[in-house]
Amino acid sequence: MRNRSAQSAIDALPRDLPVVAASGIAFLEMDHYKPKDFLSRLYYLTDRKSAIKYANCTMFEGLPVLTEYFLIRAHVMPYSDFVAEHRQFLVFGNVGFLEDWLLRKLLAEGASVRHVKDDYTMPYRDASIYEVSIKER
Image (cartoon, rainbow, N blue to C red; front, side, top):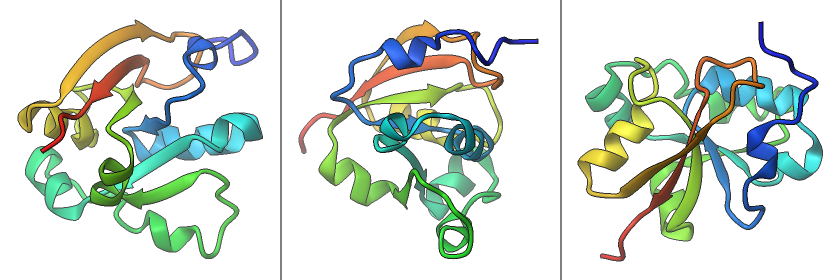
């Protein structure tokens, strides 16, 4: 089992970049356990069409509605709004996990996706951290 109290590699990454959790489950758990300063830059992105295309799964499309009823401190926003605002960011995810559509979409659309490191101190199966750069159109 991974040690939750250990210093997380993601905490040591550049603080000027937003962090996107590709998995809704990891996002909700991070929202519960991570400190407020980290949550100010943590996002979960929604895009029904892409979730169906790349993961055949829309399990977390209702997450924006949950923020109205439950204390979710981090950010949930549509993919298109996020990338219009942020051309460079970090993704905590894994290309091979079924519901993690985000990295597959980014790669298919020509974004630069560079593996930075793995963070095995976190209790999530999505232990890989990627730096993403999206070219201006």
